[in-house]
Length: 200
Image (cartoon, rainbow, N blue to C red; front, side, top):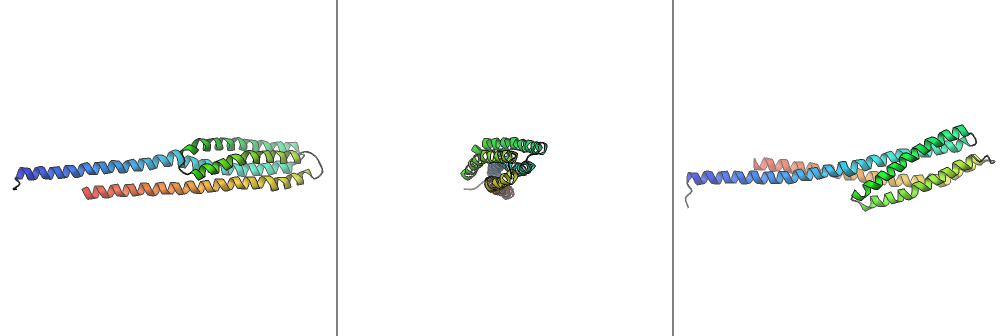
């Protein structure tokens, strides 16, 4: 079959149109992947990572202020000042745990939800042990500060360390997931760029 000039031009435009349409569809799919990665990172992973890091900082402050309140012993002004700062940090820590609780259903890994469950068990226990040690140090009994300090080191510190370990593991997990998001987004952009080059 012999193609006329008009048919050749029509076929050429048809091929160009098909290539343009396929390029547009592939670009749209790849852009959707990039947007999904971006949404996942900004709606779940960044807020979680920031909250975990803030909670770690406040748990450190809580531990320091708790020890300071224990060492104040029978000096009510120093003890109350340290206790007030610890209580403020506890309030922020509780808000951070509540925020993690809201984010948890969106997490992709069950192990991070399990870590949060361990953290939620440990925090009230840590708070209770810390308050008991501060009260014991303030009791005025002989060697109360020493006994309260030893009790705090033996009971509260391991609980706090366990919470911190769960938070560190969670932080590491979310950092890896963010890196994975970045790699997937970069791969989608490279693929889209290659498709544009090929179709052009």
